[in-house]
Length: 343
Image (tube, rainbow, N blue to C red):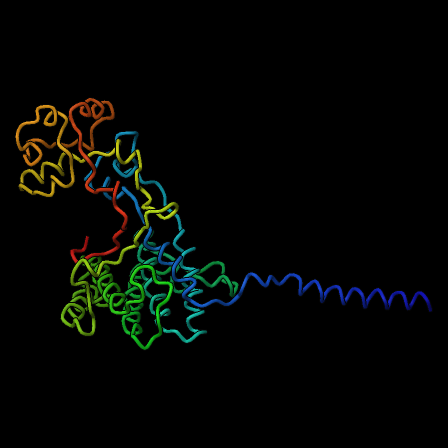
């Protein structure tokens, strides 16, 4: 009898302990539901904070002299699927937007999906798209979509984003790019769609993509498809002049001492008598030493380095060349994502 009571008491205590344990494993400081605005800020930062000299090196605008740059010599070896990590946050923002009835956040989710998938497919070609981001449902091996189908999906999502964005779609809080300006977001969406179409210009004969037709539709109807009209419409991530929020290359010693303008780029500017050279570069040391009247505005005072030269040869040229990279990185506090000129 006593043994039976002891077993019953033990069972009851165990059941109670399990119930209490389940409650204790729920962390009240880790909410499972949030307003989409709390996710938007980091999504924007992840998408737009892409500061790199790689494109300038690969395009032979600048030369790196502190070592061998893979971008300068086209020695790219590998890439990763890190964009899918950012897309997980985008998917969660869209879920919360649906839950809270704020369609403007759904529209931004469509844009950021297009933004990240565009970069992924440009890097890898065929990628998981239609079945991607379903791990929560147990789908750990999504099928790869053909690149053509990925582009079709990207263009469709941008169309949907433009249609969804409206003043009636809810206030866009947490927006550090346009401060909630819905019209400017529509301009970015449609301008980015034009950029995607331009990257498909070699596929104008594709009856599914309809590149020229889509481009014409957007360009000819600014009321329905507003696009960038000036630099005031630029999508840019503005950095503040304070710790942990400065431009990533602000006061970067390597940028100040190891990057030089490329010779062919400088020569092209000199041939065209392009005055922007005087803003991009500093005169050669030779010209500075001679200090002839007006040397700062003389094209003869400027030169560059051969991006294809051997490291030893480049070191010799450095004795007489002193140029800055084609950007004032030491004072820049903004990162431009898109512009009216398509840069």
